[in-house]
Image 1 (tube, rainbow, N blue to C red):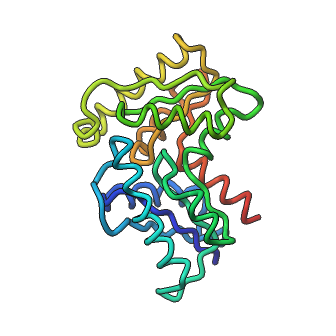
Image 2 (image 1 turned 180 degrees about the horizontal axis):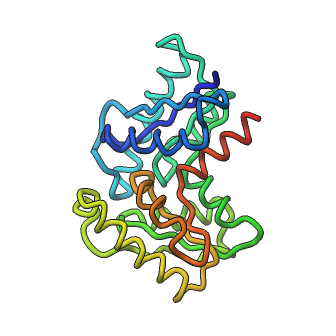
Length: 222
């Protein structure tokens, strides 16, 4: 059984369970994979700005070190970092030989496949600049149409899944109609259920970052 550790860089246990459940739809036990959701030991319940994203890096590294060191007797085959800014991904790759996948990089790769123009719909205005920077650093500037943000406080939306899905649908629609995106990424691990709900609602692919990362792990392990 190949153990895949999905690290949630915020401290919300419900988010960890949700992301792990989505990942298991791709990395399922019957195919020899086990997904273990891991919540960082400290930090905020939601990463809503760049300062919090940067502050999550040592907590991600600490969680990964404990897993990769075999503290619980497990042998980790791959690590997924479940925040859209990919905090700690580069640092982890310098520490381990197992595959390390960030959900942002995986989602952008899936959205931009075949030269498609793509946008990102998300709920966190405080992370918009970091998302733009991540897309540029990964080499997607020519295809990237930009971020479209939901209205309303991201913490309030997180507490109302139906409202969050509706607001994200509006943002996706703007990506498609105004920006002429040919695919749209839902920008955030905690937005995983909304991404699932919106997947077939539009004439273009709507990419959930958790399935994209799980699919990348599957390819790497094969």
